[in-house]
Length: 417
Image (cartoon, rainbow, N blue to C red; front, side, top):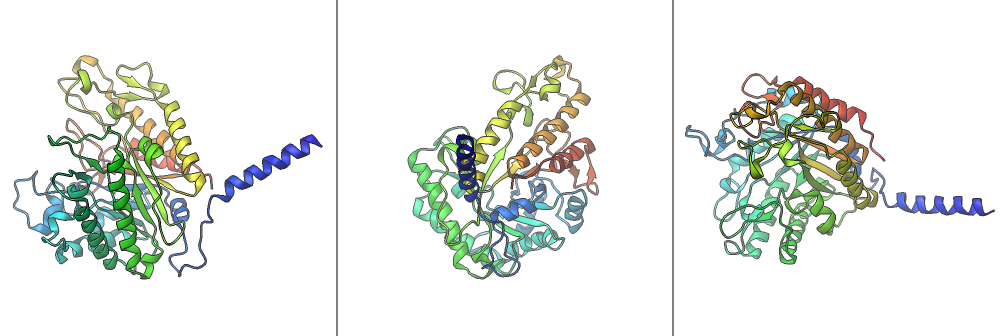
């Protein structure tokens, strides 16, 4: 009798937990918009970022570029349908397109029609291939490097609302495969101009971000059409997963189960991003994971990955708030004058990079997250060598082992819903 009672209680608790996870579809939505946020997550096997293109500025090239050519401002070639098709053919079924809007706006924050048209063209390159497409506001410094002495909160809110009204109207007829992401990595720039991604937000700063969430959501929903049902994404402070656990509060939405939480994952930082130096705060890590613990400059945070991802699942996924890793990845490490003294086996280093990608993507999927690899088309320099494909050379694959590991991790992971 006691055993039966315990089993019954456990079943009740289990049912209560799973009752919090909403169904994947919504019968009230029109055709093409049936899937809610959880359904979209489950459809995204693995995503890719079109990094350093539509969010770039004309400040890293000697070319004199027109406004609509600014996607080439950081040295990358103009985006073509062939580039996007190569990404899909490699196995990615979703693409995140970072977009910087403010250089293409007038004083009233009206978007230049030529720029909107160009963004629309690039979206269509992926959308017409049947891919999921996410567009955002990226490096828009009026909010994501906000300083209270530069811009009043009311003006920040007005810009967010007006900008997303324009974007939403442009794409209001697109189906559920188009996702809007309202913010990227919001931090507050210090008065001396430094960007600090590690400082916790104050109560007032949290209120500013919460207000931006609401302006974004309200603006999109007010445009009607498919935007009434569109899945929207909001990012935690600095897109930091630890800050998400501590500070994130789900904003109000008139339609249920259509919001996703975005976080970014580049941990441990000194493995995921190589810098020029080797001493002090610039001490790099060239290997990651249990199989590589005996290598110089190595790190193993596998246990922390499991702990963090498990917490995110408990706090968000199990409560009906899907999570995406909107950016994640690790660089290709190269020999430099500074790291020569460590006698790094760079072939083994690349094996470790592949191991990291497979592990993180698999663990993310096992906990209910979709992952988007960050690719900026940089490879062979001293830092930020995240490129998988060579956009300047017919999308030739730089590192097949890492690409294979990404796909393997996505194939091995199993969504818990």
